[in-house]
Amino acid sequence: METNIILDTLWVVLAGLLVFFMNAGFATLESGMCRSKNTVNILSKNFIVFAVSSLGFFLLGWGLMFGDGNGFMGLKGLLFASGADNSPNVGAAYEGVYSAISWAGVPFWVKFFFQLAFCGTAATIVSGAVAERIKYLSFIIFSFVLTALIYPITGHWIWGGGWLSELGFLDFAGGTAVHAVGGWAALSGVILLGPRVGKYTKSGKINPIPGHSVALATIGAFILWLGWFGFNPGSTMAADPEAIGHIVIATNSAGIMGILAATITAWLKLGKPDISMSINGLLAGLVAITPACAYVSIGSSLIIGALGGVLVVFASLLFDKRRIDDPVGATAVHLANGVFGTLCVGLFAQEGILGNEVSGLFFGGGFKQLGVQALGVVTVGAFVFATTTIVWLAIKKTVGLRVSVKEELAGLDIGEHGNEAYPEFLSRKTNYAPLLEDVSSEDVTKSRSKSIA
Image 1: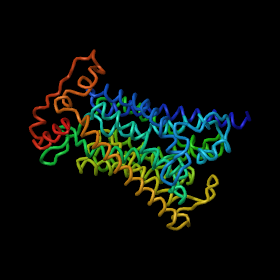
Image 2: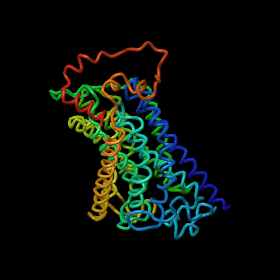
Image 3: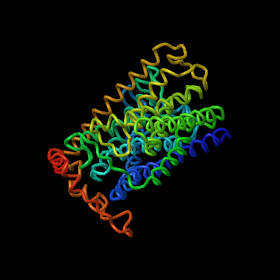
Image 4: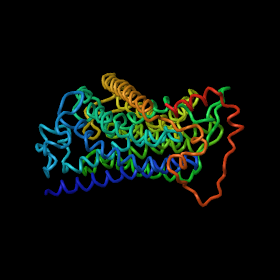
């Protein structure tokens, strides 16, 4: 095997491992931002979701996403029936089966593993948004459908030779394909689940429900930060020193500006430098630069990250005001900034950066690319929101979506898993009676009906 293929393979496998390790980041971040009584449930969801998404992507998702077919979805290579997976090499070996991925010069299973790690990330995004009240089985079923059907179809549009790619839509590492898809799926689920008991009162007051471990959440943020250095530069699918160097610095630049901008914005808006806003500012900057990291300058990445940091604060406040209860801010991070970052390609792209041939609005390219990016945002959003709503509703009508009010108040760890994350500690039971006095009977009734549905 040629030396360049060996080096490319080592790089892509390493990048894929970094993306896989982001599962640990999501698990610690989400559990830290939620209450201790739900820790086992959150860790278990993050643990099992990669197994579920791996199976769904293997059985059907890969072929739907990268198989040759029409502009809507792949039709060839489903279940690897073509035998192309046995080829040790690249390029022409996949023509007529997986043509859209034939450009990458690494062995077949390396390509599959890297894309599998991305698929798992989209499902994991949903976990945090629906935390502390969703049934464990319902989440498993939804994750399988998302990764086997919905994520691969929109992925085909963008990366699999589908209609959006034909129009020139650009999304280098998954701002729309991964983050916005996960964000739209999370939003539809949160709306149908309803808020946690006690989060909002009948008078319109918002009751903060702080997480149990800032330390875990912060460690999770650092792990995700590390993982992004595989997520974005790994999408080169080649050991290209110039491209990797540029994308690593663009990624980091956006991340640090997201932290600074979110911290300052929260300080001015809320009166204190909220650590949770700083953490989500980092993630917002990283999400925002994801689709554009190979098309924009380092200077532009600083601006994109800063704007993403500001956006995540206001998006979080807006969602809360609209009674969209997202315990970890996943919708504000992944949806709002996945959309924003995708549009940034049409604004900040520069011709000549890493061979890019497209310029955005701010660099003399006019509105053409921005229009294509906007079209992609709208169509992917509409498709994912509609299809995931149907899936959520189907689950609600069959196995049910939400645990009972009693189980929610006691914690999902005991009710769903018969286990506790911190059994050696003296249990500190929260007295919910005063809190529930200010909750409208309508909210409790809705929660109870959803658990029965």
